Length: 143
Image (cartoon, rainbow, N blue to C red; front, top):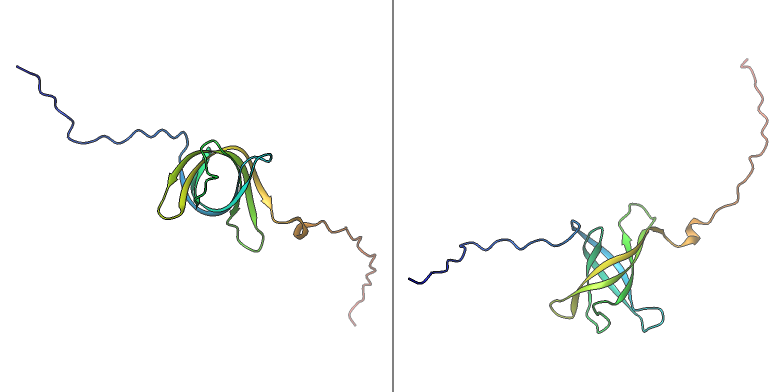
């Protein structure tokens, strides 16, 4: 009698291959794609999620997005008050996901991270120290 193959009734969950846990975020960033010696392109992008090893962002579709392309990103971090803080990182494109319309999802693996980057230096220039003036105090007794 021939053997009958039986398939499992439920499909198992796919195996998670990421090394680090991903966290959902909503941050704005500027991305420069390309090397200093090659043609470079600038994009505004939205970071969708991130981890210790990389980020996934959504940007305008372009032929500049290629797997293996070098990128430099400047991400604006949410901070209270008027002071703005950013984070800069260099990385490589490891994944590209075409999305609806003229948008593309880009997975970036971090090579080098600098945190934090203060706002433009003119806001934080050092002021020369002023020496306190000598003050004389007189003690008077109430009459």
